Image 1: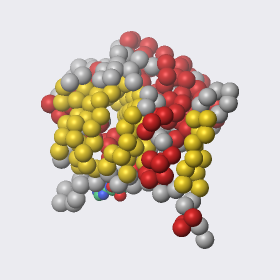
Image 2: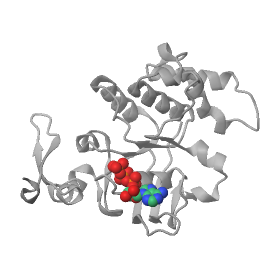
Image 3: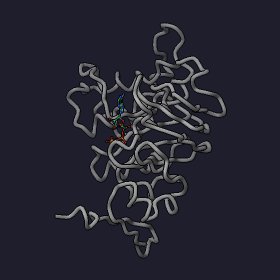
Length: 263
Ligand SMILES: Nc1ncnc2c1ncn2[C@@H]1O[C@H](COP(=O)(O)OP(=O)(O)OP(=O)(O)O)[C@@H](O)[C@H]1O
């Protein structure tokens, strides 16, 4: 795996015959950096991610990986460069976890070629890294929510992408697996764009944060500047306060309903 830069220029998208639900989003993320996308429910986070992994074609603007427009690449070439772990999970319930993970090799194989030894070795290494070897034969449909989430991450890593797109990667994980996931993501040679509901995670994981509100970008920068109390209050319609924890010096946000919203 080797990381690549990803950039979005003036991205806009809306459903056919509908108004734009995402507008004017631009950012540049250097190879190996991690960007968190945050915002209220319906702000446009998943829509932005769908544009980055070439699911939606932008209505305006472009997405480039190492300077190359993702819509100018053949779909398999794009799939070798970008992998996504989504909220929606596959319905291949009868496949084993190992078989699901092995699907990540498909974009790397020519024509109908059968998987080779190298493919199998990559799958096993990823399963070991995610502590999933013991579950490799388990049917996907029989896995717990957190195990499924890790299986989907395994499939994405098996793809050996340069850019990894994650939609709420920790939402099913217990505290230990969550810490392990964060540690692992920090150690990968890959560029990461992830949506997050937990803003504390943005401080822990991300080099940069993009704040969306009603489909528009209202802040972009390092967590310390993008997630100031005023921006958080505006994005989530709450009152927010930021404190510095001692002795770590880490920032932590606390929130309350605005007085007009309390009964
Ligand atoms: N294909 C579509 N057609 C019509 N409206 C859509 C479509 N996709 C998304 N939307 C609408 O666009 C808005 C943004 O949706 P999106 O899923 O990107 O939000 P989100 O920030 O990921 O929200 P959440 O935090 O709830 O997951 C929502 O109001 C959603 O209903």
